[in-house]
Image 1 (cartoon, rainbow, N blue to C red):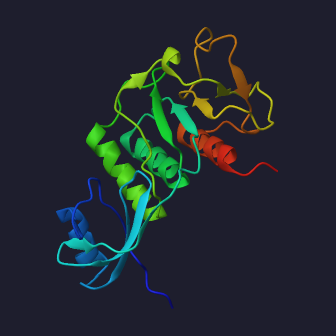
Image 2 (image 1 turned 60 degrees about the vertical axis):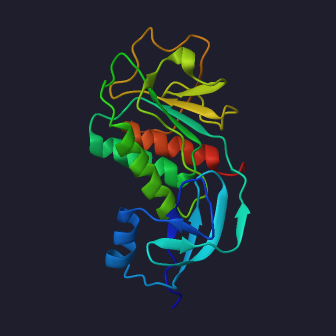
Length: 215
């Protein structure tokens, strides 16, 4: 049976032959994973640089390194789910899938509370380490408006067609849907399926479908 090799996010800049780990990372490695000095690890700066090294005393001894191009530019613009647990689920799953950016969208029927930036960033870090990714998903604590969204975008809606859209940005509405006058009239729409999905479920389904290779 192949031993689990931990994957770590160690933020840039990378200087010298070793990279310092945070106390939280070291505690998790030593206490939870029971890793020892000399064990193999992989690591990334979250900006495409990856490496294979060995675990030292609260450091990673650097080894062979390379750059991985970002595989996707998919953006999800979503109204924040109503609880922090559901926001965490949405953030973690989108980061695991490899979504490039998550935008919190300010909507008339949506919640106005978003988890603190430090908390959201910690969720992204954990998800990238879990999924062995090379890129951190970009996100922030502020809620943007329709005018701020990258174009072209497509809005998830039961009234839309079900075919794969050409847009790389998908917009997910709040519980109860968008207000009648909220969605720009020229916006393209996209039907995600026959059932009504929760905010976080719709965001994950939409991202997974956009990330899947065209049939």
